[in-house]
Length: 106
Image 1: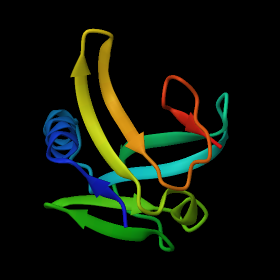
Image 2: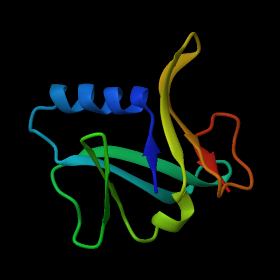
Image 3: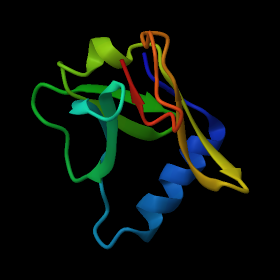
Image 4: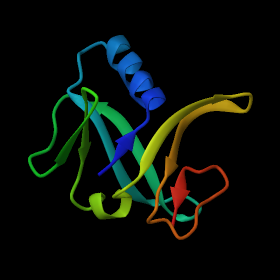
């Protein structure tokens, strides 16, 4: 299961409220790339794909494709505000290594 912290849920809700068309939820997926092997991809989408796993986090729908699911199972996603910048962070128990920016893993 993927968990969004309260801060991440609020960030997603804010993005949904500002979207031109009301999205159905947040797609999280993993693609090959980044400096550690895989990179996280996120975005608001209008509907889940037919084979997506759908997880509800305090009223926010999260869609995950079947290829990404085992790579990010158990991940906690947070949204942090810091002097260096704001953004989502990922605590992925499946990552054996990750880059210094935290946006890719291996």
